[in-house]
Image 1 (tube, rainbow, N blue to C red):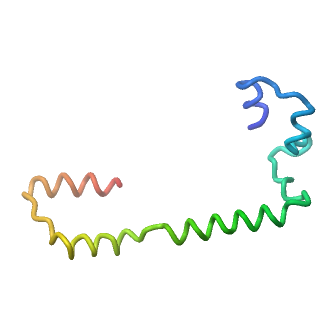
Image 2 (spheres, one colour; image 1 turned 90 degrees about the horizontal axis):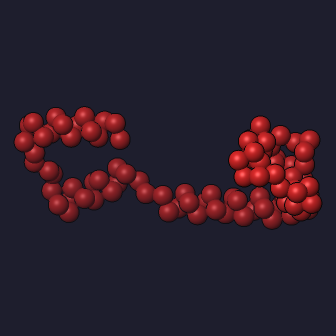
Image 3 (cartoon, one colour; image 1 turned 60 degrees about the vertical axis):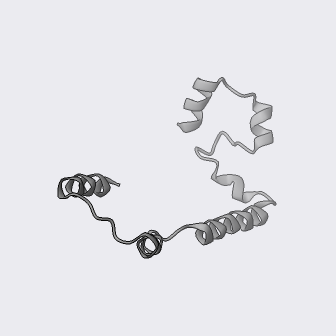
Length: 91
């Protein structure tokens, strides 16, 4: 369904291009990419990307603690405080 919608919107690619990209018409999603001989390399690269992202992800609580330690606790007017609490509750 996703492929047929994309083809309808972007124009139908040729069968040769589908074959070069590894697209099989009998598979609804391209999950067969892991059947290729390059699958172990691909899996290793994806795992590496995931772990690098986890290392670079920031911990909001520790960042907030550092900011409060550096700049002190914010002091707000009660009316502003209520408004900001509503805004940050959504975030």
